[in-house]
Amino acid sequence: MNDVSNIQRIALAYSGGLDTSVMIPWLRENYGCEIVAMVADIGQREDFAAVREKALATGAIVCEVVDLKEQFAAEYLFPALRAGALYEGRYLLGTALARPVIAGAQVEVARATGCDALAHGCTGKGNDQVRFEIAYRSLAPDLAIVAPWREWELRSREDEFAYAEERGIPLPVTAEKPFSIDQNLWHTSFEGGVLEDPSAVPPEGIYQMTADPTAAPDEPQDVEIAFEAGLPTAVDGVPMSPARLIAELNEIAGAHGVGRVDIVESRLVGMKSRGLYETPAGTLLRAALQDLEALTLDHAIAAFKEQLSARYGELVYQGLWFTPLREAFDAFLRISHETVTGSVSVRLYKGSCMPVARRSPYSLYREDLATFGEDAVYDQKDAGGFIRLWGLPSEVRARLLAERAAPATDEAEPSKTNGAGIRPAALAG
Image (tube, rainbow, N blue to C red):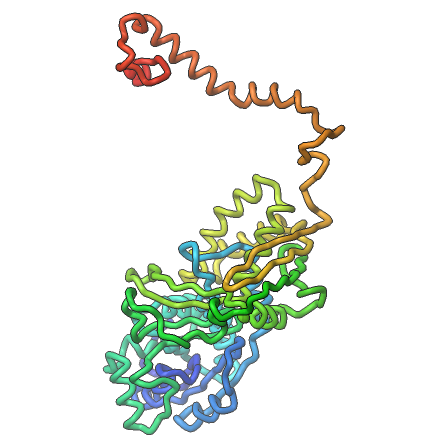
């Protein structure tokens, strides 16, 4: 269903940022309906009392602030971490992972408050419109969807500033610093303004979660992360809930300048965009988990998981969280990572994080097999037979080519052979 002709009440995913700040009055003016604002607390540094007051002051009949931090960490961030999910090899998906948890809570608020429509503040050029609306269609196909950015007469952020000024709506950004900032428990991202020029160096002081690596402490710090079945459980021996663990590691890794990336990425809607991301805890946890996997996963599972990681990252980026494919991936990972339990010590130093020690009761590493010294387990003479069998296909092919080339060998000039004494014609035959 997407009949917007007779909407009575809309649940709006509200942040108090530039777009949603002007959206409440715009929806009321253009749809003549009531607005329920839903604010998701997913770990952003926000004055939620002020956000609620602003939503009500600009026309919302209700503003629900929903604490989603633990759900976000346990049900979205940790599964994606276990999957090794990255987009285009670099982006840890902080924004993409947040959208399905927000949409899920928004649907629940809409049901509880009698809404017949859902709305979001995403632009018609971005990925988030896809993520929100696929989630809506997966969770509440009976509710109408309103996307103001695809409808209204406001065509730029400058238009939004003017619209807000006319109605006395305070904004969290200015025309001089029009960065689009998305922050949650996992990351902070920055787009827009001078960053739209990929050749421009980011302004000083733009980062919020990480220290400048050049100004980070001169002494390295080691931090130990404990994992159970591929999921983080403790920091330096202290058990923590998922959200608290991420917050703790954000502080520790952020102080050492860990987790910054400046990338140009391929948006789902077909264009390139430039963004800055800082993901200190996620960067540290990914390095630690990869190290523990190397100790506990056999080669076949590790190789398959590497393929899965790239696909999982694309799936999340493309808004396909609520799909059977993602559920199937997670089912595989739950089984494959049953033995990924142990701890990893990671050294943090001026923007880098490097695992330096690891241990696990399920370690597949055996010193008696790996040692270069004398051992009673591995008979090195056995390697000769293994090599002969492993190389048998190569040997068979080489003998075949030599036999086929034999009649022409005496006539062939050395310059017309392939370096192994075989004429190109024989190779092509």
